[in-house]
Structure formats: C-alpha cells, structure tokens
Image (tube, rainbow, N blue to C red; front, side, top):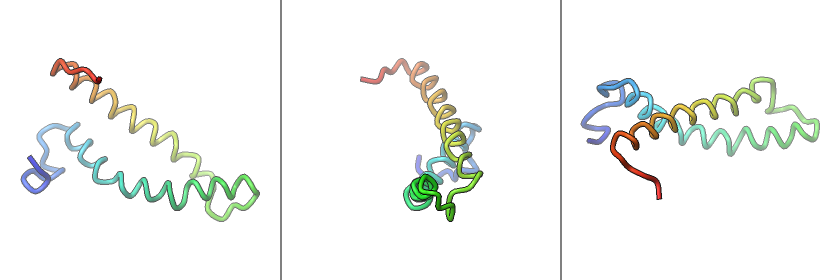
Length: 86
C-alpha cells in the first residue's frame, strides 16, 4: 500500500498512524536540526542567544522519546515476523 491508497489518518492501527505521521514530519525535523538547532547550540556556547533558548533543550529529549517508541514498535514487529537484523 502507498500513501495515496491509504491516507495516514485512515490507517487501521494507531501505531500505523503514528509511524506514518512521524515519517511525513521527519524531513522538516531534519531541516530544523540542520539550520536552527545545531547552529543555535554552537552560538549559545559562544554566548550568543539569538536562536537557542530554554525550549531548545526540549528538542533532544522529545526526539529521543519518539525514536524509543519507534524502536520498541519495530522490535515487536520483527519478533512477530521472526526477523533478525543482520
């Protein structure tokens, strides 16, 4: 199935909706890391707080939490299908 056949909000399982939504958002998250978060963090080390602020520190824990959820779900799918990562 592709995204044209079954839209993300019409996925039958909640994890399917979540994973599809995360995959659709990831290019924007990557762009934010590349163009805002990393340069803002580097500038903050030099005392320039134009980009970085208190909410900047929340990006990393939220990303780690999101990837932990994805990892746990993918691990359960691999077990159910008796697959192993080589």
